[in-house]
Image (cartoon, rainbow, N blue to C red; front, side, top):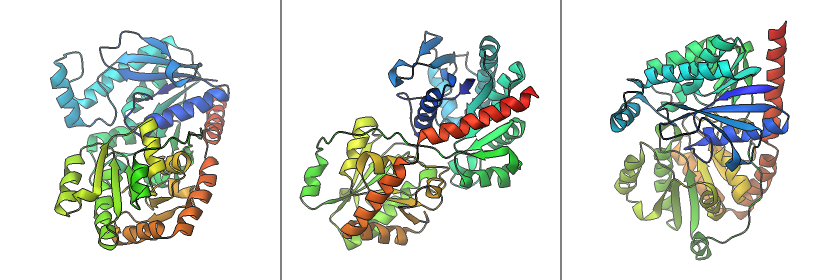
Length: 404
């Protein structure tokens, strides 16, 4: 089986969970004898047009790069700013023109490469997937990691983005979602036949870590409790609810440090909110932490909180359990809550309940131990191997159907 996989971020060059998911799934597919050609949009400073993914140690994943200005988590106004900075007349005049240009370039690759199925990750790749299907006649699978409804925090959506999503989902042969939560969104808001939608929960990398100490452990030794938020600082992820819950916790227990790891369009707003609530000295903004720095932060934390407003899946609670042996609180509005049962759940908007559960975990060693021990065992069973096995079944079913 040979797959043309379309995406727009891949470790180590990634800004969020999509890149982590793309890598995890690609590695697991390769282990199940699937050959993956992963196509990424690249800027003009990329000179090569085909490289092996040496840095991720996936010898059978071939990276193809094309020259576009698409970058992770791009929206229209940010694209306009990026294009003005480059001064390039090569890139499309708008984000959607650039997506169409990217699709044309993918069409050229689809003519050159031999493959059995097209697998497009997230909405910036959807038009490219449609073009590859048109050129090759091969079946198209769309992998939905998030929708415009998630990105807007369930508020008003970008009508152009919504139309791209709706159009692509109806053309695709199969739509894969990362949770039942996302499948419900697809069916109810995009009018997609539920029989066409397959749920494949994400997995998690389960490699062990060393036990190196971190400076934060000195704070813990002095009795300070550490509560961690790790994610993009956007409306979808709910960092403002995290800060408001922190205020409630500190009114009860001032010996708690809240660490925020991430960056995004709400960063300055969250910093101002902490100041307005008078808790700045109890909140540490650590920037966007990745890899070893992130894992040390997980280990240092006494509790991880994911307060997402709309989270199609949510890999970070699984990372916290596996990388840090850290108990987690997750929002009920998340896909990971479907598979992770040894976690406390809360509605993202209920900051009083969120604060109560934070206080309970920090103050009850037995509860904390139960959540971390059983949650970690559960997380180890949520693997990319299982996810890839389901995806391979989908590949085989759709390819065999097309052969009839």
